[in-house]
Length: 125
Length: 235
Image 1 (tube, chains in turn yellow, blue):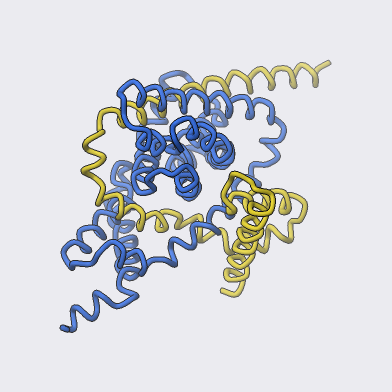
Image 2 (cartoon, each protein chain N blue to C red; image 1 turned 135 degrees about the vertical axis):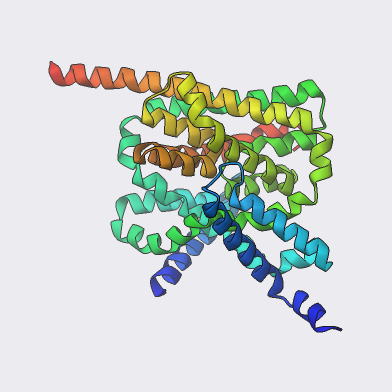
């Protein structure tokens, strides 16, 4: 438990540091996202920091869905609004999902294959 | 005031209700063999909404009771750094390819969303609300705040995208012959974030790692890009 709380305190500290940076530098992004980037940069250099954050992060990520229940309950109260615009929203969401998925999958597969081939050729010569 | 009234209006009631609904929905989901369409989070939301209506508790009162959960969205967002670090080395060696795919997919996804909604002539606020749908929920919620959209409605669209990914992504990717687990995982994570990532993880460790990395990178890219897009639609 102390490790979990220490991890949580570290994550909160990074979020607050992110918030301070956002205000000081006038960044157009949320403080928590700056905290995310800060943790990536710092933990990539320091495995000790990563080990300290891990016990706090693991239960949060495992139960991330619990945190979406309160705004979701609010959404249920807005269902009539959704129903009124159901057709355009369905086309937009399903369309951008399907096209995005296919483009990302096909393009990345082709690019990675090209790179792997080039790496294999480089190793052979 | 009756004892029942005292209990349901106690400050801890909403939190207790949410925890019970979440755990109960998870248990039911496991017993039914994990059907992708009945995501536990959807079951829990409906159960809580029904209880609030039956017991005559307003949404504002409920929200005050669960403020600790809302508060945890911040540290949960920071925690997303860890899955990105886990697949860091593999990603760094293909940084160029990943970057190109991220930008192209972002353009396609936002382009289709804006194109479809403009074609149907919906109002600007609804359009802004539909923008963050591919972004992992904690970040999507902060983006909606930045661009002045309805957070609750944006959340539904994000959840729908996630469930779509869990249900349809594997077969759709097989249909267009994407077999590389790295590409399958990345495509799933970039379009359907956490819920899709859970599905990709069931496919393989590699697919899951690339999926969670794609989810985080997409969230970062969209955090920067969406406010700019929203500005041209009154955001």
